[in-house]
Length: 348
Image 1 (cartoon, rainbow, N blue to C red):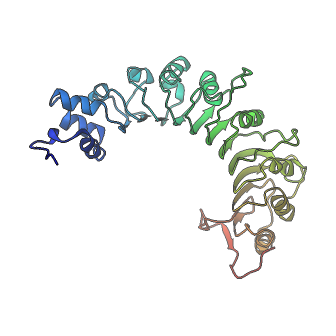
Image 2: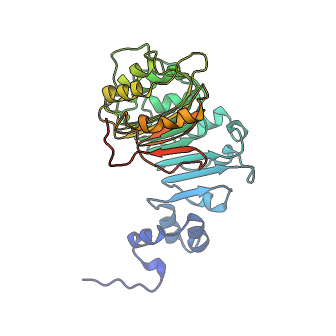
Image 3: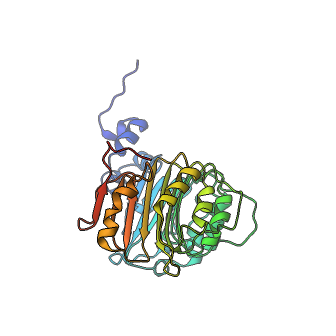
């Protein structure tokens, strides 16, 4: 076997150098290795798994040809604007996060700039995308499968859904976290993501329950919040649960409607959960109550409520709020009333 004569670090094979570089930040790579010689520059520029997280413009950014992961943080300290990163080569990018702190998104970018920075031509291999906001055009790209490898997408504030009647689907998308002001787009969005398994959907409006006989069998984890004026016993809760027969994890946060005299019947809620989603393993129900219940009467009911469903294991609340959970039994506030069902007690 031929021996490799290594006297200097740059004499090592490329594969070994790539393994070493995994343990260094891109700024460290640039300050210690860049511009040593032509060979080292080529190796640095062609790293297969370079990950970059930045909150300041740095010379190192213009040196590297491509990277697989990019996180850009905008806040009051750096005064950056998205157009300052337009020269970056994103052709090999797999993961992109844009995080904006203390600002509204339009302070650091415009819709045209965001569309020009993120699109299928610039990021054809994108698998993970996190954005503070989404334009109509970018939303269309995401939900019509224009990013064919996109598996996970987080949109903090989706202002507007696209209006075109495209029949293309986001077949690769498995995880979606989206805040939308329009609950009416819920079913259209799910119909365009046929393989979606994990959905976080936050909106003031309850998704429509007028649609019947429709199911989303692939969805396993569903997080819904923070719905306003929610009612449990007018049929909408039962119909809504029927859309997701194979749920394993369900997290629901609602403001109970103050415009009706409905009192939450937790026995009926438990019955709906058992009938509609029998495979459920993890549960969180966070309810902001529209009525203030007498403290002694309210707390006395906790042990009884805990017997109504197998997953009603932890109850944390006060006269205007109740949290029912199947796990994570540490109360968020020590002054809340808290009850944990003993494991020895029988469940219904």
